[in-house]
Amino acid sequence: MKLSVYQEVTEWIVEYRQPNHTYLFDGKSNVYAMAKWHGKEIEIFDKPRAIDTRRRKFVKAIHKGLEAFAKTVAVEPEEKANNVTSFEVTGSSGKTYLVKKEFGKLTCNCVGYMYRNKCKHIESFKEQQ
Image (cartoon, one colour):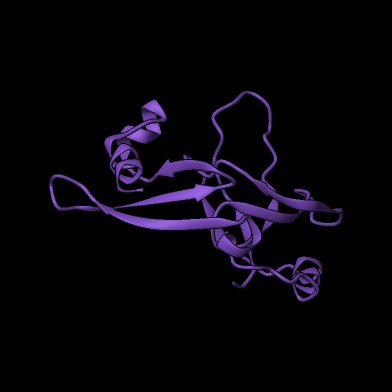
């Protein structure tokens, strides 16, 4: 997995100036480091942090400091790093969903699980075990 630098370009609708920062992403929403809005101060996180990217806009950017740091970081695949096991479950409509078992907890990528933290795909998976 390759780390990439993205600058936030979100236009915030607030009375004060909301600063947009530059982030070092892993291709998902995990951030390994960030450069403050003025670009000089870099904050390196001790472990990747997930940030909510919904309703936010980012563009690929160049930041020499973050790119230099990215070369020193060894990123393991998510499944290996988090002890994750993935299973495909076919729903009643024929659509395939991804059920993950992470540290003993089951999650699903369907809409039902997103809203209720439970779904029939996880129940179906449990029945098969």
